[in-house]
Amino acid sequence: MTTKNNPFLPTMIVFDLDDCLWSPEMHELYGMPNQPVQGILNPHVADKQQQLQGVVGLKNKHGDTVRLYDGARRALYELATDPQYRNVVIAVASTSLEPRYSHACLEGIEVLPGKTMRDMIQ
Image (cartoon, rainbow, N blue to C red; front, side):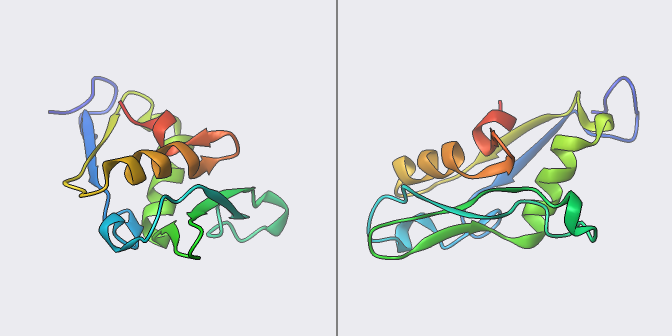
């Protein structure tokens, strides 16, 4: 299926989480990731003045840090900022053994300042 406004765009994009959007996988963690890790949300933007700061990952008490892969961060950033994607539904899928950890990451990792992964998905 395609969107009404652009017949070349899908109506839905579904991302797998573990080892597709982020690393490490949730079953590799030794505790809940709950400590924000700050960084640049859009490192692919060449103009340093347009780079945005925010939560790029979550760390647990053992120092394990969940971060988006560079390509995943770039794709999510584009989906969040390019108006042509406003009617495309974003979803995630996972068979995680630690769904609470996945939910924490979705709620904590930002794509834009103040806009988490959870805010993007339906």
